[in-house]
Amino acid sequence: MIDRILLFPYTITLALRDRLYREGKLKSVSAEVPTISVGNITVGGTGKTPHTEMILRLLLDSDRWGYSNIAVLSRGYKRKTKGFRKVLRDGTAANFGDEPLQIAKKFPSVTVAVDKDRVEGCRLLVHPEGVAELPPSDVIILDDAFQYRKLRPTLSIVLVDYSRPIHKDRLLPFGGLRDLPSRIADADIVIVTKCPSYLDEWERGKWADYLGISSYSTASCRGRSARGKNQLLLFSTIAYSGMEPVYETADSRFTYSPRAILFSGIAKDEPLRDYISDKYKIVRRFSFPDHHRYSRADVAAIMAAVKSNPTAVVITTEKDAQRIVDAKDVPDSLRERLFKIPIEVEFLSDEEKKAFSEALLGSIG
Image (tube, rainbow, N blue to C red; front, side, top):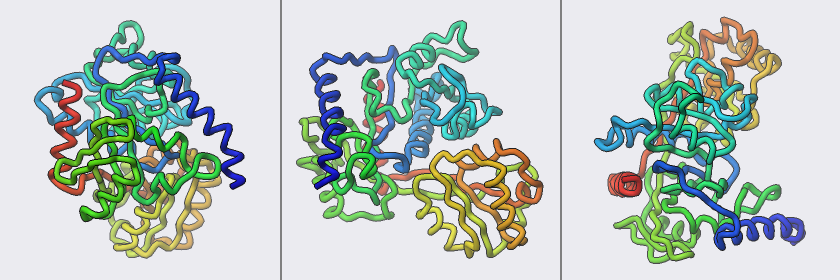
Protein backbone atom coordinates (compact mmCIF):
# COMPACT_ATOMS: atom_id res chain seq x y z
CA MET A 1 0.00 0.00 0.00
CA ILE A 2 2.79 2.44 0.91
CA ASP A 3 4.45 1.93 -2.48
CA ARG A 4 1.24 2.90 -4.29
CA ILE A 5 1.07 6.11 -2.29
CA LEU A 6 4.71 6.93 -3.00
CA LEU A 7 4.33 6.10 -6.70
CA PHE A 8 1.15 8.14 -7.12
CA PRO A 9 2.90 11.37 -8.30
CA TYR A 10 4.98 9.41 -10.86
CA THR A 11 1.92 7.51 -12.08
CA ILE A 12 -0.06 10.74 -12.49
CA THR A 13 2.84 12.37 -14.35
CA LEU A 14 3.07 9.49 -16.83
CA ALA A 15 -0.70 9.41 -17.29
CA LEU A 16 -0.86 13.18 -17.86
CA ARG A 17 1.98 13.04 -20.39
CA ASP A 18 0.23 10.23 -22.23
CA ARG A 19 -3.05 12.16 -22.31
CA LEU A 20 -1.40 15.34 -23.62
CA TYR A 21 0.15 13.40 -26.50
CA ARG A 22 -3.14 11.67 -27.29
CA GLU A 23 -5.04 14.96 -27.34
CA GLY A 24 -2.38 16.57 -29.53
CA LYS A 25 -1.40 19.17 -26.95
CA LEU A 26 2.11 17.72 -27.07
CA LYS A 27 3.16 17.23 -30.68
CA SER A 28 4.57 14.14 -32.39
CA VAL A 29 6.13 14.23 -35.83
CA SER A 30 7.01 11.55 -38.36
CA ALA A 31 10.35 11.18 -40.11
CA GLU A 32 10.61 11.63 -43.87
CA VAL A 33 11.37 7.93 -44.34
CA PRO A 34 9.85 4.79 -42.76
CA THR A 35 10.91 4.20 -39.16
CA ILE A 36 10.72 1.07 -37.01
CA SER A 37 10.78 1.54 -33.25
CA VAL A 38 12.06 -1.31 -31.05
CA GLY A 39 11.43 -0.63 -27.37
CA ASN A 40 10.04 -1.82 -24.07
CA ILE A 41 8.34 -0.51 -20.94
CA THR A 42 10.75 -2.14 -18.50
CA VAL A 43 14.34 -1.36 -17.54
CA GLY A 44 16.77 -3.34 -19.70
CA GLY A 45 17.05 -7.03 -20.38
CA THR A 46 14.25 -7.59 -22.91
CA GLY A 47 16.55 -8.23 -25.88
CA LYS A 48 16.31 -5.04 -27.94
CA THR A 49 19.72 -5.48 -29.57
CA PRO A 50 19.28 -9.07 -30.87
CA HIS A 51 15.76 -8.18 -32.09
CA THR A 52 17.16 -5.13 -33.88
CA GLU A 53 19.76 -7.38 -35.49
CA MET A 54 17.00 -9.80 -36.54
CA ILE A 55 15.15 -6.92 -38.22
CA LEU A 56 18.33 -5.86 -39.99
CA ARG A 57 18.84 -9.36 -41.38
CA LEU A 58 15.26 -9.46 -42.58
CA LEU A 59 15.58 -6.08 -44.33
CA LEU A 60 18.95 -6.94 -45.87
CA ASP A 61 17.54 -10.21 -47.22
CA SER A 62 14.45 -8.56 -48.74
CA ASP A 63 14.16 -7.56 -52.39
CA ARG A 64 12.75 -4.15 -51.49
CA TRP A 65 15.28 -3.05 -48.87
CA GLY A 66 18.33 -5.24 -49.49
CA TYR A 67 19.91 -2.66 -51.79
CA SER A 68 18.72 0.40 -49.89
CA ASN A 69 20.44 2.53 -47.30
CA ILE A 70 19.42 1.15 -43.91
CA ALA A 71 20.21 2.98 -40.67
CA VAL A 72 19.98 2.33 -36.94
CA LEU A 73 19.57 5.30 -34.61
CA SER A 74 20.27 4.88 -30.90
CA ARG A 75 20.64 7.22 -27.95
CA GLY A 76 24.01 5.63 -27.20
CA TYR A 77 23.41 4.90 -23.54
CA LYS A 78 26.30 5.92 -21.21
CA ARG A 79 28.45 7.31 -24.01
CA LYS A 80 30.78 10.19 -23.24
CA THR A 81 30.12 12.10 -26.47
CA LYS A 82 27.23 14.47 -27.16
CA GLY A 83 24.98 15.17 -30.12
CA PHE A 84 24.81 13.31 -33.41
CA ARG A 85 27.61 10.85 -34.13
CA LYS A 86 28.11 8.24 -36.80
CA VAL A 87 29.30 5.07 -35.06
CA LEU A 88 32.73 4.01 -36.32
CA ARG A 89 33.53 0.30 -36.39
CA ASP A 90 36.97 0.96 -34.91
CA GLY A 91 35.51 3.28 -32.27
CA THR A 92 34.96 2.69 -28.58
CA ALA A 93 31.96 1.89 -26.42
CA ALA A 94 32.82 4.97 -24.37
CA ASN A 95 32.22 7.19 -27.40
CA PHE A 96 29.21 5.45 -28.90
CA GLY A 97 27.72 2.98 -26.41
CA ASP A 98 28.24 -0.79 -26.41
CA GLU A 99 25.09 -1.79 -28.34
CA PRO A 100 25.48 0.66 -31.27
CA LEU A 101 29.15 -0.33 -31.58
CA GLN A 102 28.24 -4.02 -31.61
CA ILE A 103 25.69 -3.47 -34.40
CA ALA A 104 28.11 -1.36 -36.43
CA LYS A 105 30.74 -4.10 -36.29
CA LYS A 106 28.33 -6.87 -37.27
CA PHE A 107 26.60 -4.96 -40.09
CA PRO A 108 29.21 -2.95 -42.02
CA SER A 109 26.74 -2.03 -44.80
CA VAL A 110 24.35 -0.41 -42.29
CA THR A 111 24.70 3.16 -41.05
CA VAL A 112 24.64 3.26 -37.25
CA ALA A 113 24.32 6.61 -35.50
CA VAL A 114 23.67 7.93 -32.01
CA ASP A 115 21.71 11.01 -30.99
CA LYS A 116 19.63 11.69 -27.90
CA ASP A 117 17.36 13.89 -30.05
CA ARG A 118 15.72 11.27 -32.27
CA VAL A 119 13.88 13.85 -34.40
CA GLU A 120 17.12 15.64 -35.22
CA GLY A 121 18.93 12.33 -35.62
CA CYS A 122 16.45 11.14 -38.22
CA ARG A 123 16.68 14.45 -40.05
CA LEU A 124 20.46 14.20 -40.24
CA LEU A 125 20.32 10.58 -41.40
CA VAL A 126 17.98 11.54 -44.23
CA HIS A 127 19.88 14.77 -45.05
CA PRO A 128 23.50 14.10 -44.00
CA GLU A 129 25.11 16.72 -46.24
CA GLY A 130 27.86 18.54 -44.40
CA VAL A 131 27.42 16.44 -41.25
CA ALA A 132 29.02 13.09 -41.94
CA GLU A 133 30.20 10.97 -44.84
CA LEU A 134 27.21 8.68 -45.07
CA PRO A 135 24.47 8.00 -47.60
CA PRO A 136 20.94 9.40 -47.12
CA SER A 137 18.94 6.77 -45.22
CA ASP A 138 15.91 5.09 -46.81
CA VAL A 139 14.65 3.38 -43.63
CA ILE A 140 15.62 3.86 -39.98
CA ILE A 141 15.40 1.46 -37.03
CA LEU A 142 14.94 3.37 -33.77
CA ASP A 143 16.55 1.62 -30.82
CA ASP A 144 14.78 2.05 -27.47
CA ALA A 145 12.41 4.77 -28.69
CA PHE A 146 9.02 3.69 -27.31
CA GLN A 147 9.10 6.42 -24.64
CA TYR A 148 10.31 9.04 -27.13
CA ARG A 149 6.87 10.42 -28.03
CA LYS A 150 8.15 13.40 -30.03
CA LEU A 151 8.81 11.04 -32.93
CA ARG A 152 5.95 8.94 -34.25
CA PRO A 153 7.29 5.72 -35.85
CA THR A 154 5.84 3.97 -38.86
CA LEU A 155 5.86 0.69 -36.94
CA SER A 156 6.11 0.28 -33.17
CA ILE A 157 7.46 -2.97 -31.69
CA VAL A 158 7.44 -3.51 -27.92
CA LEU A 159 9.32 -6.33 -26.17
CA VAL A 160 8.24 -7.99 -22.92
CA ASP A 161 10.47 -10.40 -21.00
CA TYR A 162 8.81 -13.79 -20.42
CA SER A 163 10.36 -14.04 -16.96
CA ARG A 164 9.19 -10.54 -15.94
CA PRO A 165 5.46 -10.26 -16.74
CA ILE A 166 4.42 -6.62 -16.65
CA HIS A 167 1.13 -7.39 -14.89
CA LYS A 168 3.18 -8.55 -11.89
CA ASP A 169 5.58 -5.62 -11.97
CA ARG A 170 5.49 -2.10 -10.55
CA LEU A 171 6.82 1.28 -11.59
CA LEU A 172 10.33 2.36 -10.71
CA PRO A 173 11.86 2.44 -8.14
CA PHE A 174 9.74 -0.30 -6.54
CA GLY A 175 9.73 -2.39 -9.70
CA GLY A 176 11.18 -2.50 -13.19
CA LEU A 177 8.51 -0.59 -15.14
CA ARG A 178 9.62 2.66 -16.77
CA ASP A 179 6.20 3.34 -18.31
CA LEU A 180 2.54 2.61 -17.69
CA PRO A 181 1.57 -0.99 -18.54
CA SER A 182 -1.43 0.40 -20.45
CA ARG A 183 0.93 1.80 -23.07
CA ILE A 184 1.38 -1.73 -24.41
CA ALA A 185 -1.90 -1.07 -26.21
CA ASP A 186 -0.17 1.50 -28.46
CA ALA A 187 2.26 -0.98 -30.01
CA ASP A 188 1.68 -2.51 -33.44
CA ILE A 189 3.60 -5.65 -32.52
CA VAL A 190 4.21 -7.11 -29.05
CA ILE A 191 6.91 -9.77 -28.71
CA VAL A 192 7.26 -11.83 -25.55
CA THR A 193 10.99 -12.55 -25.45
CA LYS A 194 13.30 -15.15 -23.86
CA CYS A 195 10.56 -17.77 -23.91
CA PRO A 196 11.12 -21.50 -23.51
CA SER A 197 11.33 -23.26 -26.86
CA TYR A 198 7.67 -24.34 -26.74
CA LEU A 199 4.50 -22.66 -25.51
CA ASP A 200 1.09 -24.28 -25.88
CA GLU A 201 -2.03 -22.43 -27.00
CA TRP A 202 -3.31 -22.08 -23.44
CA GLU A 203 -0.18 -20.24 -22.25
CA ARG A 204 -0.14 -18.03 -25.32
CA GLY A 205 -3.75 -17.14 -24.63
CA LYS A 206 -2.93 -16.33 -21.01
CA TRP A 207 -0.20 -13.96 -22.16
CA ALA A 208 -2.70 -12.24 -24.43
CA ASP A 209 -4.96 -11.78 -21.39
CA TYR A 210 -2.07 -10.44 -19.30
CA LEU A 211 -1.28 -7.89 -21.99
CA GLY A 212 -4.89 -6.80 -22.46
CA ILE A 213 -5.16 -8.28 -25.96
CA SER A 214 -8.68 -9.57 -26.66
CA SER A 215 -9.93 -11.94 -29.40
CA TYR A 216 -6.41 -13.31 -29.76
CA SER A 217 -6.00 -16.08 -32.34
CA THR A 218 -2.96 -18.36 -32.19
CA ALA A 219 -3.51 -19.15 -35.89
CA SER A 220 -3.23 -15.53 -37.06
CA CYS A 221 -1.14 -14.34 -34.05
CA ARG A 222 -3.46 -11.33 -33.87
CA GLY A 223 -5.89 -9.77 -31.46
CA ARG A 224 -7.26 -6.41 -30.33
CA SER A 225 -5.43 -4.12 -27.95
CA ALA A 226 -7.25 -2.37 -25.13
CA ARG A 227 -7.49 0.68 -27.40
CA GLY A 228 -8.92 -1.27 -30.33
CA LYS A 229 -5.69 -1.56 -32.32
CA ASN A 230 -5.19 -4.64 -34.48
CA GLN A 231 -2.17 -6.05 -32.68
CA LEU A 232 0.30 -8.80 -33.49
CA LEU A 233 1.42 -10.93 -30.51
CA LEU A 234 4.51 -13.09 -31.05
CA PHE A 235 6.87 -15.20 -28.94
CA SER A 236 10.64 -15.44 -29.38
CA THR A 237 13.49 -17.33 -27.76
CA ILE A 238 17.24 -16.92 -27.47
CA ALA A 239 19.63 -18.96 -29.61
CA TYR A 240 23.29 -18.94 -28.62
CA SER A 241 26.03 -19.17 -31.24
CA GLY A 242 29.50 -20.65 -30.97
CA MET A 243 32.14 -18.78 -28.99
CA GLU A 244 34.20 -16.14 -30.76
CA PRO A 245 37.51 -14.57 -29.67
CA VAL A 246 37.38 -11.07 -28.24
CA TYR A 247 41.01 -10.41 -29.21
CA GLU A 248 42.85 -11.60 -32.31
CA THR A 249 45.51 -13.16 -30.09
CA ALA A 250 43.03 -15.53 -28.40
CA ASP A 251 44.01 -19.21 -28.32
CA SER A 252 41.08 -21.46 -29.26
CA ARG A 253 42.55 -24.34 -27.23
CA PHE A 254 41.19 -22.68 -24.09
CA THR A 255 37.63 -23.35 -25.31
CA TYR A 256 38.24 -27.06 -24.76
CA SER A 257 38.82 -26.54 -21.05
CA PRO A 258 36.13 -28.06 -18.78
CA ARG A 259 36.30 -24.99 -16.52
CA ALA A 260 35.09 -21.45 -17.20
CA ILE A 261 35.20 -18.01 -15.63
CA LEU A 262 32.17 -15.89 -16.53
CA PHE A 263 31.84 -12.13 -16.29
CA SER A 264 29.06 -9.90 -17.57
CA GLY A 265 27.44 -6.52 -17.14
CA ILE A 266 23.91 -7.19 -18.38
CA ALA A 267 20.46 -6.97 -16.80
CA LYS A 268 20.10 -10.75 -16.32
CA ASP A 269 22.76 -13.40 -16.85
CA GLU A 270 20.76 -16.48 -15.78
CA PRO A 271 20.05 -17.75 -19.33
CA LEU A 272 23.71 -17.38 -20.24
CA ARG A 273 24.81 -19.18 -17.08
CA ASP A 274 22.41 -22.03 -17.80
CA TYR A 275 23.74 -22.33 -21.34
CA ILE A 276 27.40 -22.31 -20.31
CA SER A 277 26.78 -24.76 -17.48
CA ASP A 278 25.79 -27.46 -19.98
CA LYS A 279 29.40 -27.61 -21.17
CA TYR A 280 31.56 -25.99 -18.50
CA LYS A 281 31.92 -25.95 -14.76
CA ILE A 282 31.72 -22.25 -13.87
CA VAL A 283 34.48 -21.82 -11.27
CA ARG A 284 34.08 -18.04 -10.86
CA ARG A 285 31.34 -15.62 -11.84
CA PHE A 286 31.47 -11.83 -11.88
CA SER A 287 28.19 -9.96 -12.24
CA PHE A 288 28.46 -6.23 -12.91
CA PRO A 289 25.71 -3.63 -13.43
CA ASP A 290 24.15 -3.28 -16.90
CA HIS A 291 26.39 -1.33 -19.33
CA HIS A 292 29.23 -1.45 -16.78
CA ARG A 293 32.46 0.27 -17.80
CA TYR A 294 35.39 -1.96 -16.87
CA SER A 295 38.15 -0.53 -14.71
CA ARG A 296 41.67 -1.67 -13.90
CA ALA A 297 40.31 -3.02 -10.60
CA ASP A 298 37.75 -5.14 -12.47
CA VAL A 299 40.43 -6.53 -14.77
CA ALA A 300 42.60 -7.27 -11.74
CA ALA A 301 39.76 -9.18 -10.06
CA ILE A 302 39.18 -11.28 -13.18
CA MET A 303 42.92 -11.92 -13.46
CA ALA A 304 43.03 -13.10 -9.84
CA ALA A 305 40.43 -15.73 -10.80
CA VAL A 306 42.52 -16.66 -13.85
CA LYS A 307 45.60 -17.20 -11.68
CA SER A 308 43.59 -19.50 -9.39
CA ASN A 309 42.24 -21.40 -12.42
CA PRO A 310 45.06 -21.27 -14.99
CA THR A 311 43.46 -23.63 -17.50
CA ALA A 312 39.99 -22.03 -17.48
CA VAL A 313 38.48 -20.22 -20.44
CA VAL A 314 37.07 -16.75 -19.73
CA ILE A 315 33.64 -16.08 -21.23
CA THR A 316 31.62 -12.90 -21.62
CA THR A 317 28.77 -11.47 -23.72
CA GLU A 318 28.93 -9.61 -27.02
CA LYS A 319 27.95 -6.35 -25.31
CA ASP A 320 30.60 -6.76 -22.63
CA ALA A 321 33.19 -7.52 -25.29
CA GLN A 322 32.68 -4.01 -26.69
CA ARG A 323 33.43 -2.52 -23.26
CA ILE A 324 36.26 -4.73 -22.02
CA VAL A 325 38.42 -3.71 -24.99
CA ASP A 326 38.15 -0.12 -23.72
CA ALA A 327 39.69 -1.15 -20.40
CA LYS A 328 43.29 -0.19 -19.68
CA ASP A 329 46.10 -2.71 -19.26
CA VAL A 330 44.30 -5.94 -20.16
CA PRO A 331 47.08 -8.56 -19.77
CA ASP A 332 48.01 -10.88 -22.61
CA SER A 333 47.18 -13.81 -20.34
CA LEU A 334 43.56 -12.63 -20.25
CA ARG A 335 43.40 -11.71 -23.93
CA GLU A 336 44.49 -15.18 -24.99
CA ARG A 337 41.64 -16.93 -23.15
CA LEU A 338 38.80 -14.38 -23.50
CA PHE A 339 35.82 -15.37 -25.67
CA LYS A 340 32.34 -13.98 -26.27
CA ILE A 341 29.09 -15.81 -26.97
CA PRO A 342 26.91 -14.11 -29.62
CA ILE A 343 23.14 -14.51 -29.41
CA GLU A 344 20.33 -14.36 -31.93
CA VAL A 345 16.58 -14.52 -31.48
CA GLU A 346 14.18 -16.90 -33.16
CA PHE A 347 10.40 -17.05 -33.20
CA LEU A 348 8.86 -20.18 -31.76
CA SER A 349 7.17 -21.13 -35.04
CA ASP A 350 7.49 -20.58 -38.77
CA GLU A 351 3.99 -19.06 -38.72
CA GLU A 352 5.16 -16.34 -36.33
CA LYS A 353 8.26 -15.67 -38.42
CA LYS A 354 6.09 -15.26 -41.52
CA ALA A 355 3.56 -13.06 -39.72
CA PHE A 356 6.34 -10.80 -38.42
CA SER A 357 8.00 -10.52 -41.82
CA GLU A 358 4.73 -9.66 -43.55
CA ALA A 359 3.79 -7.10 -40.89
CA LEU A 360 7.23 -5.47 -40.93
CA LEU A 361 7.70 -5.27 -44.67
CA GLY A 362 4.04 -4.42 -45.29
CA SER A 363 4.13 -1.47 -42.90
CA ILE A 364 7.15 0.26 -44.45
CA GLY A 365 6.26 -0.36 -48.08
